[in-house]
Length: 242
Image (cartoon, rainbow, N blue to C red; front, top):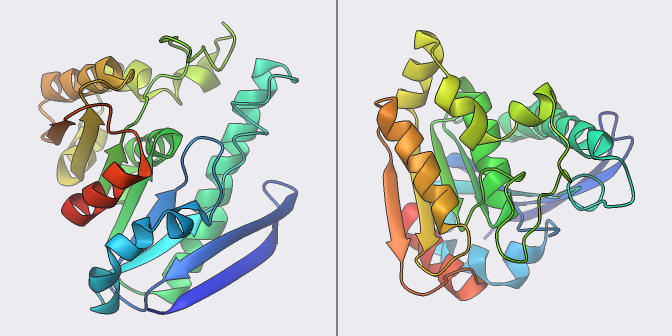
């Protein structure tokens, strides 16, 4: 399996960023790490190994991106207005730096957005906001409104709300989408949501699923046994949904 390491200075984030690329051809997968995770986590947890056959056969090329969660949503030392601002900078990094690199490396037109835990939020949010760029999105064990508290998972914006927050919480902005062009782009995208029945974010997934149903946007929703919020489950999920 071909493995490439990339590192460069990001003008959008004003810092060095790293990523790993696995494979040589096929649909490009932008794989977002879990909560406060790193670009090497999926390799270390053998999640990449779980789809090695598809990668080696040229069906998938996986781009494991890094996160700045500790500088954005999980940075409790700064004002929540800066947290969402830092997240917006991160999205620009993904769209203006990572995606062009992926397109330069691989001319395949199919791009999949995927992630686990908070990575599922990143994957779903960027795909829902820019559906014309993606053919598929896979959210595993995700949370789709970070302003909603659940158990020991707090509101990551500390009660702060503005338009930037609203337009980056799928369970908030999607229910008010009425642009027929955007809805058609969402309908054309393959949407997969997977969550454990004991996962604290189960309700968040049902909310998103119901919003999509109300909009007539087809999608697949899979409920797994137990919490299923661990690498051993994600290894199984990627084999099925990638």
